[in-house]
Length: 213
Image (cartoon, rainbow, N blue to C red; front, side):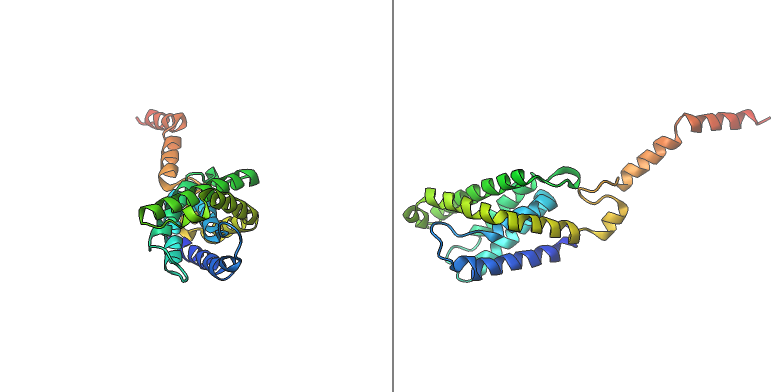
């Protein structure tokens, strides 16, 4: 992930964590808790790709593991968001095209289901049986419902900020930024070489030889 994207991702992750802990974590809603960090990771992953999404997800999950009132093993949520960021990054639109609202909501719904199941699975491996007492089915259903309700307000904003402020100025000037329309340096060199070695170039060379005594 490019250096220009690190401060943008850090600000968005911190804002999401603050909202997660101070607002949504205290609502006492039935079932699951709305997962703002998951929406932030999904939005950034669909802009930065699988590698960037994996790194963003790991950083966001690790901060959530360390932030109070965390009551689970450190690294558990980092693993979940790391995998979710990588998977969402694989669905990044080509050439910087905007993803439709329906497809974005579908990605959020799948990520909500997968993250809840994976979080419960990892918890079962480390001896955390809280999901059994609450009911895994109700957790999955409410997680999908809450995340889909928040997704139209969070994911487009995150993607817009990621596209606008996460560009590398050097790569953008060279025309080889991810998702950008420009050709890379090697592609431009090959195109120039092919144009210069075309029939017109050979014709000029043959005329030059013909003028020699």
